[in-house]
Image 1 (cartoon, rainbow, N blue to C red):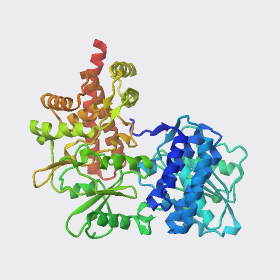
Image 2: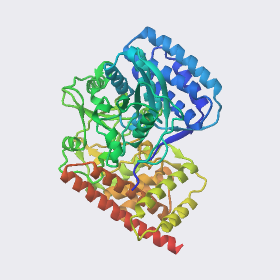
Image 3: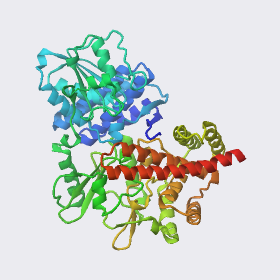
Image 4: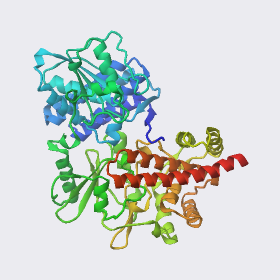
Length: 587
């Protein structure tokens, strides 16, 4: 079953470097969040240049190292050093820009920075703590980052250690070859240092990428006890870890700093977020920000049972701040990269956030959206009457669909749906691959050359709507789901239409009312075959989310609930595919 996908975009590195240089030149004294965004952006440019094999790799790496030094200077609070670092970064960017060409390259989205609240600040702290074990004069250090995110993280680690007097023999990034768990690295005569640090956001389900580098270092002559893993968490690899990987993932080799132990601007993250809540509300917090997991959210929402469309594995981190006034604030991680920040800045200025159904963010702090917690009654499927559909649900789906999809984007989305359906159908003898291919070709044939509105919510289940004591109905947790870590990506507005139909359990009459309402507001319509195709894709996505969420939960009752949700989505998927298969045969 497919759930996640690598996300990327194509752009000219020269144009991105020029745009970033202009932005940097305008701010000789950046704050910590801005310096962090510059660092992440330079790491993305370096990744694209190195992966493409261009000759500007050394210049790109030098610019990232300089951005890391600037970030650490801002983090230290030195204004005089910051001005000099900004000047030097602009100079290195100018050199890089002049050597680049205007061809488009693929830029990977760094997953930890975009979706999982992984801070380069944490790796700076890890480096500082690791450095206490050694005397700088007695060792040299090799830092190896795993691309994509390793371009940024390795630069931070190397520069943090340089600031503590260590000699960095080498700082490089690479991509292990092969398929997990059988990954490998060929150093081509590389000589390890007396201490070697491998840097990544993992480990993932197998831990194989970092182990591949460790194995290559050992084969090149490094002592196993000189090899250290700077990781994103201390839990070790997931269920796909092999016996050899287990021997490498020993506790004394792993170095990490947890999110809540990370300092942002001189405060631990929970305290920094509580201060942000105070700044944006003008009210005093009762304490530090608290984790807001699924069960904590359920208690705050006063829900006796978990809604069907709850899948913790696809949720971004959230925190909760209690205010002395009795009001509360939710902080939702929205990404630290420039593209994520620009998305939310555009949303904050959009008309839809002044709509009566919207919950407008109070602001954004260090990558976290600050949102008021809305008290009230969560809606249920029983509320899906005609008035709600025509006054709220339909207008909302239309209002949040603020951008247009190019036909190429639509076709790419159709192929992603087809891949998800094929992955699911491999377990179902009744749905051969040829049937999936046939229905996909039919839907592709209906795309045409016109643009279509992109869906704008993606979380339309009843519990995502709240009726306040005043009677006002508001939608929560919307936006940016077309740019998350899952395979869904940008899809036409029909994605929200079928999502609403599935989650609200709309009968044919109510579903028709919703489609008619959205068509009258947007002009969008599609065939019954296309609608069914996207409905099958939506159910495949939701079944996978429920399935993998269940594998991550130890609490029996919640796990059983998730498995029941998986069965519901699979049943809808089967019936929809049966219709599509019949349609293909008829055609």
